[in-house]
Image 1 (tube, rainbow, N blue to C red):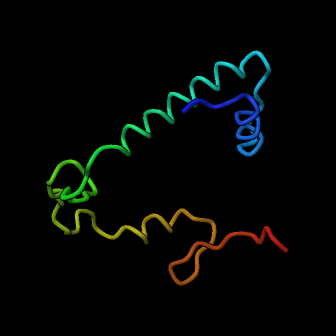
Image 2: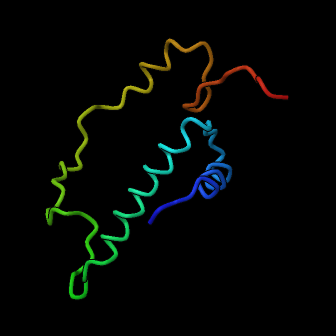
Length: 95
């Protein structure tokens, strides 16, 4: 599929891309090549092919869900300027 300059200008406008007159010929060629590739991919018979989300049929290894650190909230809050009921108190910044 070959695109004309006017079509490329319209596509560039819709995509909010600035394409100079010097670049227009190159962009038209590049877009035409991309559209040719898409046409080739659309021509492939994919009946009977099961869609997949990932090319590898593998399961992600997960680590065991266990506690690895002890609760140190009191230690961390002991150096804070102000806390209340386990929360850090900070000055109001939005009115």
